[in-house]
Image 1 (cartoon, one colour):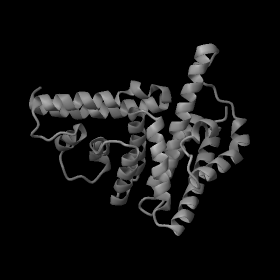
Image 2 (image 1 turned 30 degrees about the vertical axis):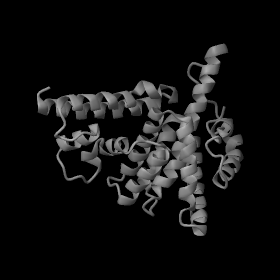
Image 3 (image 1 turned 180 degrees about the vertical axis):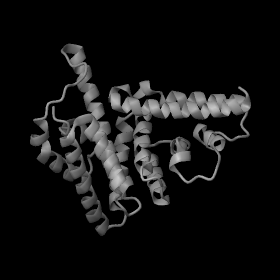
Length: 270
């Protein structure tokens, strides 16, 4: 199966015109080139193993396609298409699927930007409304932990140029709200690794409390409960079916959550 041969399993997210029709047509036009590129599916086989692999492949493709579509909304949120943000997406595809996938992913993003511009020319919120519909489909088809990991990727994209604008933060909250992600979880993700990526005037301990979503005045038991709840949501095992690259990213995020917990525990003598 070609890397972008996602129409059957993915366009369930894209049921609403005009964006769904546009993407269906465009993806269909590139399948012949990409489908000729061989790709091994780990664990592929026969019987139940093959069915499981096909199921995992479908979920993974749905996740990656969702990431690509929502990236188009985040990248252009501040009115500028930054090279660093585009390169992050290209590198993600290149490292996992090869140069052809990176080129086609880049072309899809550029076409999405063009479509967004055309739609917004008719109504200032046309593309935003289309993204809302897509997010509604994502919320129905992906688990909460998978949506959190998708949100984490979008936040990383917004941070790669070293500064997150107010417009990008607003777009992140838009997408998170549309995907039915709790605001406290979005804020927690925004504060991961914030000391090196965002202009937040607070020390690392204060940021650690923000990651856990609790006040510095919280009791020890409240801190422990907040960590357990967060760890359960973000455990890498919960996104294992999405592929090893996604799991690695989840492990990095999980470690950052643990680092925040350790800072707080150390300060409290726990």
